[in-house]
Amino acid sequence: MERPTEEKDGKRIYTAEDCEETGNGMCLTGKVIVICPDAFPGSCGNQLYLCTGGKGAGADPVGQAVSGVSLDNGEAARFRRSQILGILKPQLLPEQAKLQLSQIRPIGAVPLQGHRPLYSGYSFLEDGRYAAGVWLCSEKEARNYVEMQKPYQHKVMLCDMDDFCVMEVVAGKMVFPDEETLRKAQGQADPGCMELTQ
Image (tube, rainbow, N blue to C red; front, side, top):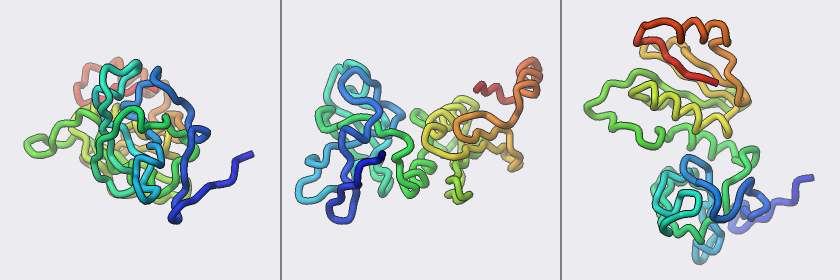
């Protein structure tokens, strides 16, 4: 049974019970992290961030600095590792935060200026709502976008530049292309053929 939601200033207060992992043995990069409520003097603040790295983000960190992107307003922020409660249970991510997360390009993505996008990535809520697509400039970026989104989103879709769907993941499972089509595509020498795996 889900415990009652605590609120302060109209926002839910997340605790260690809302995390699937806590402690220094976890890698935070690419995960939705929960910031301690006392990191925001005077108010609850936004506790949910996508961790984008930092010396304190790895398992058994070598430093304290952790960087992230707010899933409330998209702003970048830095925290100390000691201010992080843990990695949020994916099922607890609110819909608005899922839409904000869907707009974040993968960690390590090249700047769009000077690079031609090859794909666009979309993430959908269960009711079909979604935000604008995200430009992805390589197969690696496309794979990283899917891996970053699929634990949190109902559906993730990749489209080529002609807006044809090249991959669809629903509830964490790849539904298009099917395994046989994917095996055939991976056997081809065509460099335009995306080689994503489940």
